[in-house]
Image (cartoon, rainbow, N blue to C red; front, top):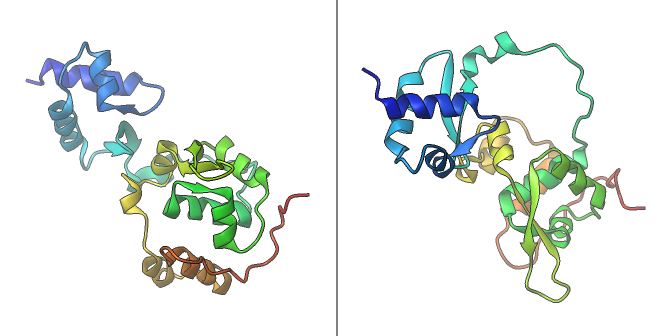
Length: 201
């Protein structure tokens, strides 16, 4: 017989409008300890048409990856990320928290404020504070929605540069960007990239 707490956790997640942390589920259920129930549900749904997954310490149901094509709707994308936005998103993901000046140092070109605005509107990047240096620049990081959208449990699951190269996902310019992203500390190498089509006016 299924435990009442397991059923309650299942119902809570099924009705939730967005992913929930274990703490939020616990509060919703009057302070109950829910970790064991979440683990039991995740195991129960393993291999089924829908799965219970944890992304960025938040839980939600999702379609099994091998069945996603059955539910994909035919629709036109109203907006695609520009090359600049894609590069900025990658830099934030691999270097967060990072300021706009640090993003520009890695890319080697100026980054328009609108590029970051697009990523924040998409819900993938957020402001997390200010760097404690003169001028106190705003610093950015990715969001749980970024992890959820790309099927990542945490940033530790981001592909390594070698994996991206092996998959043929880096052209010469992007390869140069990847080399810059690999640097740790010291002066950031400049990237010989095309001019940013979204350069600030």
